[in-house]
Length: 195
Image 1 (cartoon, helix red, strand yellow):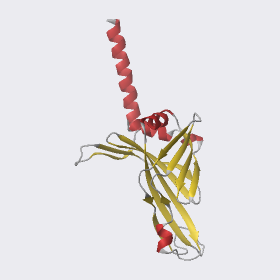
Image 2: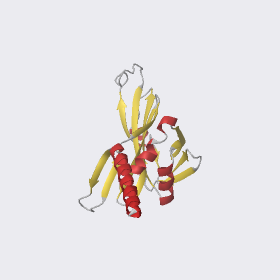
Image 3: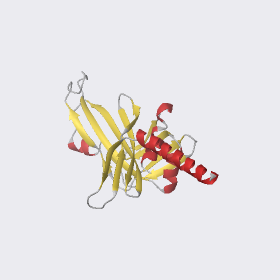
Image 4: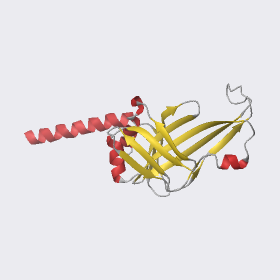
């Protein structure tokens, strides 16, 4: 009888913890594909860097059994002359096979790579038309969203630890992003939501 009570208590605690964790989970997308029957989940984007020229967001993604780390970077660039179409098409390119390195809170490093090329989407704003910007420059705002597939080991590490620093490989070289201490755990909490 004591074993039954202990097992029942343990199961109850697990269910309470799982329910409490699920209550913290927020999703941009939480659907089942009509074509494949696979579950598709994107957690809400969590911001990790906010300065005058860049904004960054992270999300955990599950598409069926495959898990991904999604990274969205928004850049702002002042240009004295109107950018050309070529400028816009090459403003931010993440080549297929590009690496993303993550320094975790336990000081280990996880390395992942994208399996597809991503070209950022850009918008041009004429001088003086971007919010309160009163410069005589054109403003180019570029959005890039990259999904990095995760191995079982990478997923386990990201689920267990927060992220301190990211290094993203782009067509222009590496870009480093530092995540503040109070935001370091948001990604590992997001991965707990897509298990």
